[in-house]
Amino acid sequence: MLKKRRSKKLVAEINVVPYIDVMLVLLVIFIVTAPLLQQGVAVDLPSASAKALPAAEKEPIIVSVDVKGNYYLNISDSPQLPIEKDPLSLRVSAELKRSPQRKVLVKADKSVNYGKVVGAMVILQQSGAPSVGLVTQDDSKINHAPKSSNV
Image (cartoon, rainbow, N blue to C red):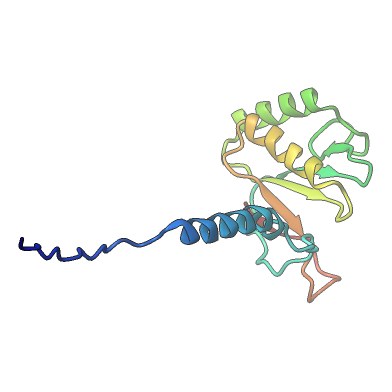
């Protein structure tokens, strides 16, 4: 009897289980560290070097936000008194219908809650302002008039 010689077949397979384990560990690491990378750096926004606005025929509409978060409108009947959101929106909307090219600015105290500043900008944009600028003070020349930059 003749014995047939069987040749052994080579198996060319790669065991990927260890690679899957490594990928899962890396995935967990990225999931944990991603929110930590999203945190911003504390900055002092009100100081900026921006060029001054050109002189306009009409004064710009300026909404001021004080430390307590109250809104003030420079074109209202009594600009030194706080104004609520609805009358603010109505007054700005009416003014922008009369002169749509008028500049619209927000002037806020640097220690005010950022949400209040954004709230003022939203009110102004909903009132029809095509763009809203932020009034800042030139950090190199403290005694000069406020500057503004468009947002």
